[in-house]
Amino acid sequence: MFDLVPGAASSAPSGLTALSASLLLFAAFTPATGRELFKFDASTGLVTLVADLEAGVDDSTPTSFKACNGRVFFRANDKLLGTDGSSVDDLGLTSSTAEPGRGICVGTQLLFPDGSTLRKSDGAAAGTSAVATFTAKEFAVLGARVFMHDGDQLVSIGTDLVGPPLLLKEIRAGVSDQIQTLSTFGAPPRLFFAANDGISGREPYVSDGTEVGTVQLADLIGGTASSMTTVPPVVVGSTVYFIAAGQLFKSVNGGTPASLFMSPQPPAVLAVAGTKVILRESSTTDTVRAFDDATGMVTLCDAPTVNTPTLSAAAGRVYFVARSPTTGLEEIWVTDGTAGCTQLKDLLAVSSSTSSSSPTRFAAIGNTVFFHALSNATGRELYRTTSPFESVELVKDIRVGSDDGIKIVQPLVVMGSRVFFAADDGTNGV
Image 1 (spheres, one colour):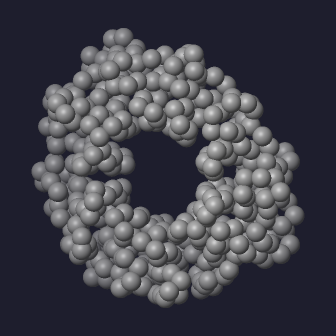
Image 2 (cartoon, rainbow, N blue to C red):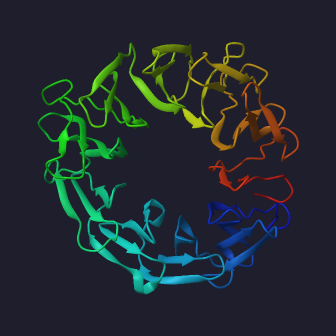
């Protein structure tokens, strides 16, 4: 699309963030500016420098991007900054620990962590201020309040972000990292999380947003042992599904957890395809199963892998990497949760104990799913699969031949009807 640094040198774009359907903000390097803030305007097809924040060839290194209320917040030169794509505003905060990229957009304001301080900003210096002394690790919005935790205390603040956060529940006084996987589900909405109170171990909790309504759902294995794993839960409608004590459980609208399946091997990851929950075990076979209330638990396939099992949901399907039965290499597979699993293609034609096509970074535009993968002929390039998801096509051999075009494996960013990514054609750098 553009070559910011002519020749083989790289501009190495990173932090690609869609501000609108036509404006993309990112950090990139040029010899004249150093690493600074740039934008791509899809309406004109032009890439331009937004601001040389560290004048001359020195880097300001923009990072931790977050789009909120028509602006992109980021940190550069240890300052919190905001931009509408035309100019950059200094929001009056100097900090090396501010992380707008980990924040949550609440109406017209961004709520974000800054080390042990919780801050907010409406995109102006006068509207940027400290909210409380609190080390926020996760956020969730429930009704008219924002909930967050520091690993021990679960607190909330109104969506106007006025006033100090109110303590909802202290799980284990003075002991951090006791809360995890904060999410919302149900009708009316509820919070779901795992917590360890030091008595029952790490168990499932639910909250309706009130102190009295924040309770342990169950002590699933009794005593001080923990039943909950670090596998993130998934939500289908009003039901949250989670892994605990080697089993798949569900809770409907905060009701008593029901065990759905005792896995022969520890379940490693969950994902959702339509209304079906896809479960992948961690074992020599990595069995993939699907569950819904209508059909119960169904075994889809065995998907042996040599790396950490993963599942990636896109366009109503779940994609994963597993060994090809013909080459023994890791290739891309897909399932819709109803009719087994389909290996889409052997991208690496010859068997090697050290090679794999290693598909990764899935992103969907309508019924087309894009991803990075490696082949013997092309190196690592951009591929796609389109409904009915029975084949894989190379989008383009960006660096012609067996060298990699995709050298920096960053997330694919969807903006409008296009997907953006960084690549090297061998002539113009990354």
